[in-house]
Length: 152
Image (cartoon, helix red, strand yellow):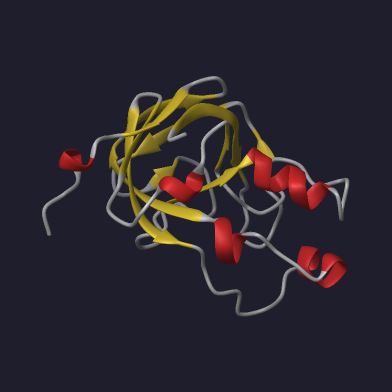
């Protein structure tokens, strides 16, 4: 299903650290989450990951939680596999556009070293902020109809 809810809103002040669930944040167009170390990073201004994917990894490493994979928004009940580059998502007051799915890990993270696996290279969703606004835990996340994609 391409609709769900925000389970966690996570950020960190420094790159390379686990993000903490802050409950709510402000997304700014062309930037990302105000106060997050990854804000303004090219086309990967905001990252999303499904709670269900984190829960599968908890079978190997039970201490994992929202933010462990450095994702900004953890979604619940949202099948991220329905997304393609160019799709738009309404998240709370904000509008996001999917710019990348997965990312190459140049250096294996601690999770990979412990478990032999990491979900961000396959499951991570990266977005640009098209319209800013406040997002918070419990907000609805919805994929918008294809006609709302940017014409490129």
